[in-house]
Image (cartoon, rainbow, N blue to C red; front, side, top):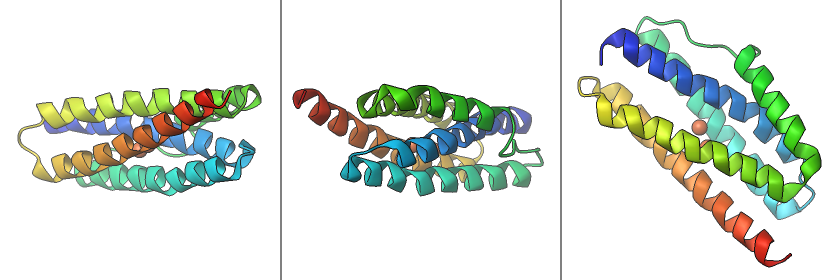
Length: 148
Ligand SMILES: [Fe+2]
Ligand SMILES: [Fe+2]
């Protein structure tokens, strides 16, 4: 993968992180169950750090990073607002779908990049976070489903 291709991949990941910031913020305020809301709110700083780290790496590689407040943020806000009235379970299911996609989106360049160890280390660390987020969401969703 050449540098421009790496920058493009990192920018797509960054856009997903900017989206995530919006729906996690909205859901963190909307979810009524205090323990679940706390868990969702604790994911927010991780996604924020992901966005900051990707932004820095894109700049270091000479690229122009996506910024908050653009199309990705707008899309994330829509996703958050649309799922919000559907209730906690649906909000968590939407978040899980996005985390599942993020796992795949981080794994692909981790497999494909062969010549940029700094980027690989960032992707590896952030993939592990997304896997933990997905695991937490799967457990909460199973709990909610079994209590219905
Ligand atoms: Fe993330
Ligand atoms: Fe995540």
